[in-house]
Length: 114
Length: 116
Image (cartoon, rainbow over all chains, first blue to last red; front, side, top):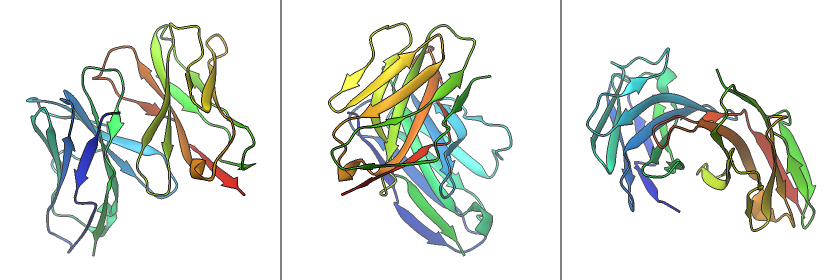
């Protein structure tokens, strides 16, 4: 299957700082990438969808100025959590698809905001 | 709008036995995809199996098979010869037949515990 990497796997930051999470498709070109948030023991909640070279489409209730998404190439998308606060602490997962009708996922990033 | 329902929050099975996880969905679409993903304790989402709605034949991947009932909008996952490594959260997901750009609609998940 296709491989998607995510970096960092864990990050701890102080309140008010910004954090960038990278998502890379390693062996395929990802025309579309998805960013999810997952709370403990819950399902994945889609935050936004991005197509390479285009602006991201955010789900209702997701602040686009707080969660900045850049999909600059067919293998890289980044999620920046700006001015992070403790309530932003969560597990963030990226998904990627391209050319097939299947989405593949990165291993996730655990964000802890102190 | 599409919805996916997994009515079993938790299931358990003894090693080497067979277990079936249930999933129902609601849609007005005629063509679509259905998926089962597995999320073990590592939290890496792993594709288990995929079914195209226009295919009548049920998908099979080694010990994993589905029972796809399109009219009933049911998509259950059968795991045969359960192994300890099958312990995970299992998510059923729906996607419209629009290709790679459309989003997945997930169910709430079923936590499966395989015990020795």
